[in-house]
Image (tube, rainbow, N blue to C red; front, side, top):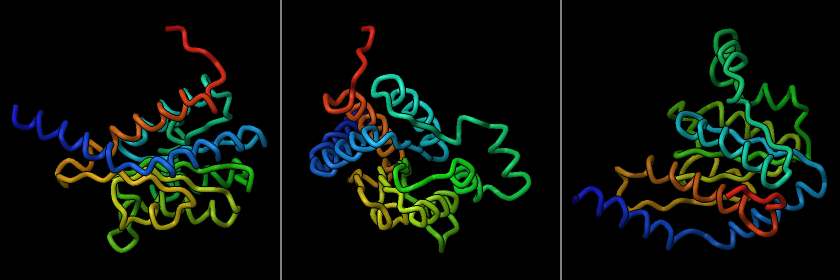
Length: 194
């Protein structure tokens, strides 16, 4: 019972500290993306990869946003990992897709990548590539000291008081926020069946 109470207390504190202005700016950016017929690319590793895959479905189905994620093609990811290394899986995908200034890169990550620690270098490389193409970058992250937070046009930080819970709560908020986006009246154009 103690853990359950602590977990939900941390969730509530995280909700209260979320940057609502950054959320609304993200909604506006995504609305403009659709208007310009741009594409949304969502990346993440680990649990965030699973969230990226689910989010792509919702953006496509509910918002008519042309959304993609490289993590949906396991054959491509594993062949690139085998031949060129795991750090190349995202930037090489974006290059092949001809990412451009009309597109948006959305990053789901707990830490957001760290070059010195050699963590999530694939995310760092994707962000660097997106910057060369002048694509906008949105990050939903659990740490403010990572590469994604410090190199994104829009960033939503999930403040977690108990640092032992930063991963589960950050990944929970990825779900919470993309569901907020796809149900937002400025973005949702197709009704759900339920």
